[in-house]
Length: 200
Image 1: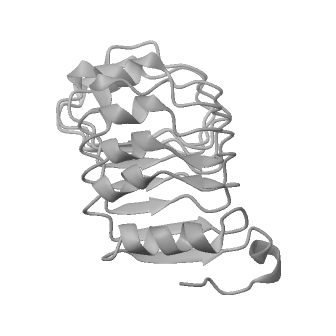
Image 2 (image 1 turned 180 degrees about the vertical axis):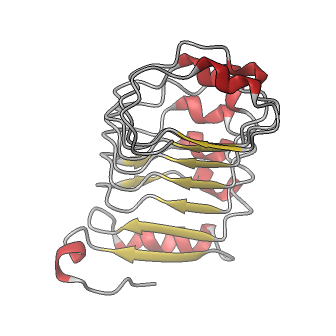
């Protein structure tokens, strides 16, 4: 249903009990006032490119969603994350206005992939240690100046991409020591304009 001028969420969609994937990206929907618990089989929900400043509470009624796309909106925080999102394995939050990885991420214990580049995040905090199943983290194009040692708890992390503008040599050395089995790619935020290659 992507790129359609839909103003209201079609409530009768919940009758499609075998539906596995639904995209409402770039529509005219401003809220979802429906109980989504009838989506017994829905695993993938795309709500990107809707200029939303908040995430509809209705997502908390999804019983088995494992993939959620919220990129290219106007979100400023992660307050929408609750224990109801404990089954999420993939979360796309890039190109928003999020300023911190707040404590709500503790509810994402099953998360394997987090794409949150293109925001305003300055720190990878202690809360990152809650993401023990995380395999991929893209947090580049954020003004990162601090990385918590708690990232060592992300023992499954295989790929990390971030900017090094605000990091010292000691910071990058620590990160290599903390994540010996992870591919770590760095870039300067200005490299996006020059097309320079990433550095390991």
